[in-house]
Amino acid sequence: MRVDQVIPSLASRDAIGAHTVALTEALREAGIDSDIFYGNCTPDVASLGRPVTELGRPAKGRWLLYQASIGSPVYDVLAARPEPKLVNYHNITPASLLEVWEPSVGYEVGLGRAQLARLAPESRLAVADSSFNEAELIEVGYGATAVVPLLISMTGGGVEPDPLVARRLGDRKADGGTDLLFVGKVSPHKAPHDLVKMLAVFRRLYDPKARLWLVGSPLGDTYGPALAGFVAELGLSGAVTVTGSVTPAELEAYYQAADVFVCASDHEGFCVPVVEAMGHGLPVVAYAAAAIPETVGGAGLVLDTKEPLRFAAAVDRVLHDRSLRDRLAHAAAARLAHFALGRSRARFVELVRRAVDAGPPGR
Image (cartoon, rainbow, N blue to C red; front, top):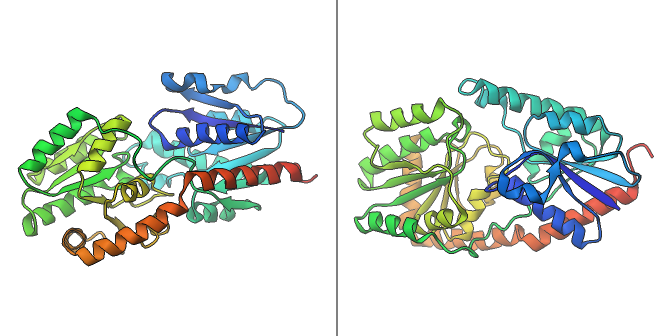
């Protein structure tokens, strides 16, 4: 039994890349041969796979599992091959949320959704990391589907915080002020501009020293400067920080220093940082878009509006309502158990084994 994975891009500091590596390890431990074939990769993980051009001749008994998250020429290589196929879907952002700011990225995600639909008739099984994503698979024609969370540790711990970052954050906190945290791509569809609006209200009404940390790198060349200009126009340049890409140790320092995790995204297929925040004991306040209500699962305040006044009031409430914080912490513990890595690994391997044992579509 052999199930090789095909992924457009294998990258470090990337949840999908880490999931793909973990899935390979889980399959191998279960006695299923598996390698990773990528379109491109970051140098530090190149040794964990091989270029997709090295897939070689079709082999009897071999299956290909496609990690779908963006439009890519890798799909064309995959689609041209005769091996039976499986799909792992991580959601693809709708083009309408990106194309105005970054037309090339808008094209890529639009292409990705078209490629996902074209793969449906060939797929024996498609696994999504949320029920929200599974519904998108069903909508475009996938028959056999299932839901398994990402095979990555999302519960916190295991990494020591970077001492320099921790010291710098501690110095800021010593001067007072609430630390609000968002982790993710600084992209228009994740709407950090709406968090900036909320911060302006929060500082005016509740805490004039509050800070917002946007931990992630900007998408493309236009949104980042526009966001910086907006921050400056509101007089918040000293209160809003975009960190750029960070190491796991640096990220740990930000989680440990934060008081509340906030999310105003207009689209999330899962949102790993929400679960990571729960794992670090942070209360979560998030806008109820796409998969967010499913991922939070009652372990945070999920808002039906991003109106800045209501968002800011919700943040203040989780900071000062001890009874609410205790209830959210209890719910978070149960939610974290649902995303336990061992449970997800066993479930994913079981699904793959069943699909392969059943044979290719139409057999």
